[in-house]
Length: 251
Image (cartoon, rainbow, N blue to C red; front, side):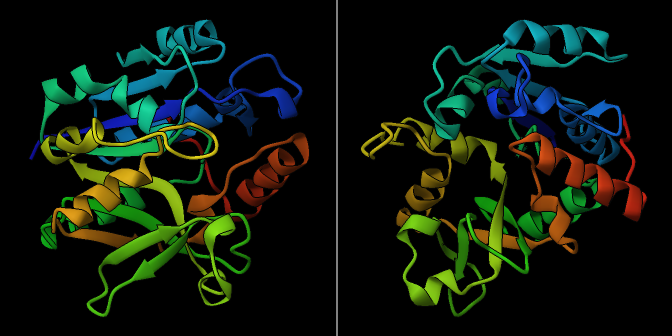
């Protein structure tokens, strides 16, 4: 089955105290974006599209330095993850099959998780599958709410979670598998009727569920798959974890 990847890399690195996009911050001397691309390729996916935004010239420079080709598309306005994926519509239409959408600043999203989540996605005949993880402290993450059959019924953001939902320790990594055709069929239905006036990719799951499509959740074996960094101290923590656990960039 044809597989491709869209990697979101438009985030600003302001709190990182750098003038480059946040996904280009280094973990063990390799950009976080490089870690993600390395895992995607190790999982056997070679058709890759990077969605760039802030500091797009730095993403172009990084892409040009790779020993293989990747496509890039430009998100001129940062209007949310759903809007970012909308910029890759032509890429998605060209490749079809299934697409994994990942954050470019989650360096420990490993190839095994990408492969096993795809297996679950196809085995369960899902229109979409969110990659989740069980964490000790779920604060700040979207909670995974499952139905009685184990399928996904909702991703509830921290600010919207009641006490019972807030206690759930299974959280979204921000990574998703989609049937590409079904994703394209609902992308245009995502609305920006929220406080931030942004288009959120998880809303595509809600729309698919409303159309009686099956949406699954695959729980990664390691909670590290959800980790990212928003400031230099968190970046140092990622480096400490990588050193302690022997993680290496596969680029």
